[in-house]
Each structure stands twice: as C-alpha cells, then as structure tokens.
Length: 311
Ligand code: KMH
Ligand code: ZN
Image (cartoon, rainbow, N blue to C red; front, side):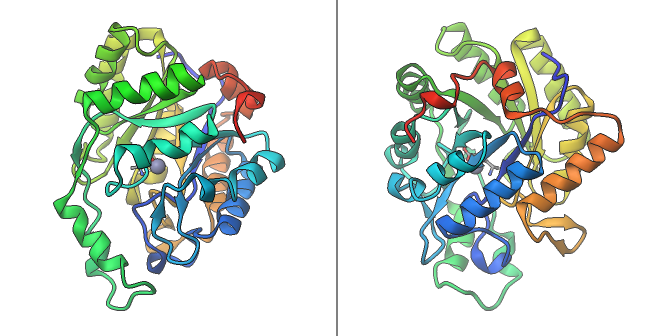
C-alpha cells in the first residue's frame, strides 16, 4: 500500500440507495446537494463523490444537466476534488451512467469493478407511509436487479473516461474478486497507478462489514499492487464510521456520507454530511492523525488538476 501521510476524507453526499422518506437530511435538490457538499468540504472532505436526483421526485438521475445545476457552484466555492459517480443507480443503462462524467470530465469518477447483486430493500419494510410513490417499489425492486459492471463496460469506461478525459478512478471493490479484476486491467495497461482502491463493505450482495474482511482486502491488494495502490474504505450502514477510522489507521483513507449511511450513531439520524465528516475528522485528529487537503489528495492520486475539467 502507498501509505497516506495525511488521511484523505471523501464524502458521498446523496447516492441512489437511500430515498427521501428515509431521512429529511438526505439532499435531493441541486441547492441541497450543493449546500451539503460545500459544508462537507468545509468540514474536511478533500473529495466529494456526487450523484444527482430529480429535483422534484428525488428519484436518482443521470441527467448531466441536473449535475450542472450544482457541480459548478461546488467547484466555485471549494477546492475539493469532484468525483462523479459512474455507478448512478442499479436501474440505469451504461449510457446513462457514463453521461454525467463524460460531460463534466472530472478529475475523479467512480468505477465499479464487478457485476453483483446490490440489495437495499431492507428499509422498504420499515416504513408504511412514503413521500413519493416510487420509493417502496424502488427499494423492493433492488432484489430483482443485477448491478451490471461487465468487463466490456469497465473497459469502455477506462477508455472513454480515463484515456478520453484524463479522469482517474475510485475503483469500487465490493469483494476480493474485484481486486483481481482491477489487476487484470492494470496488466493490460488500461489503467495506470496509483490506483485508488475503494473497499466497499456491508452492501448486501458484496463483502460483509467484518473488520477481518478489510484486513484481508488489504493483504490481497498489497500482494497484487504493492506500492501501486492507495487504500480507501467505507462501510454502508452502521459500520460506516468503524471502517472509515480503521482504514485510516491502517495507512489508508476514508469515505463517509449520507449516500451510504444516514446515521451519526445507533438509531440517531445524521443532520448532514458535514456532521459525519466532522465526527470522523475529530476522531482521527484526537488520535494524532492529520487530514489531507484537496491538493494533497491530488498529489497522492496523480490527478490532472481542477482547471482541466469541463465545469
Ligand atoms: N453507494 C456505494 C455503495 C458509485 O457511485 O459508483 C457505491 C458507489 C458506487 O458509490
Ligand atoms: Zn456513489
């Protein structure tokens, strides 16, 4: 592992797993996404991982024009690294998922390293009344959908977004096998180090949020990539803060955000993304760790710089 001298905190602001009824803090409109992203950067997030939503319904959106209603504002207000999702939602086509990043040409985009079940239906059984009529079926429907990330989709993303736009990737690895897939593409020369390996734990359909799985992922990544990778990790749900902290203490980096957990503690909804970033930052600093600036993240990851984007 290429150890990070100071911890790079990523914040994933809204995502496509949670729905508006599940938390009043979940940002939906461009205004809400921009405000919360800017506040998260102010709290110490060096990288902002961004999805979009339909401003009225809150349904996950891949419309580049919706992204353009908040990304330029965020970029004007912070020097944070903008990371545009190519995961979108599990209901989107490859074309839809790639469109925002191809339009915005960000410094970083996520790239999901394997097809899988990606189930987030649990919440559907916890609520009986919904703000929007799409929410319950969307959540339950995740039990009948494959999150498709074929090798040809991955290769296309590497060519069109990586080579074509100079965008580098947050490689989302939901299981140990995804590391070997990344190694395959690296061996073919389709991606260059340093690789930002984002360990994703606790997604139903992916590897579980047991700490042994994080140390095992690190052991295999060390074997496959040596100093050519930078670790980051997060867990969806209640283990979010544990994994963010553990990854940092292992010499890696951390991701938090309402995209993957709506909580700040057991049974306590977070009031904002910034609240999660602040909790993590305070915990790390209390242990003597320092937080990386956006430019330190750029240097660590070999990013192209914020003037080379299309927003
Ligand atoms: N919500 C995470 C479990 C992406 O946007 O490309 C996965 C994620 C993928 O953030
Ligand atoms: Zn995401």
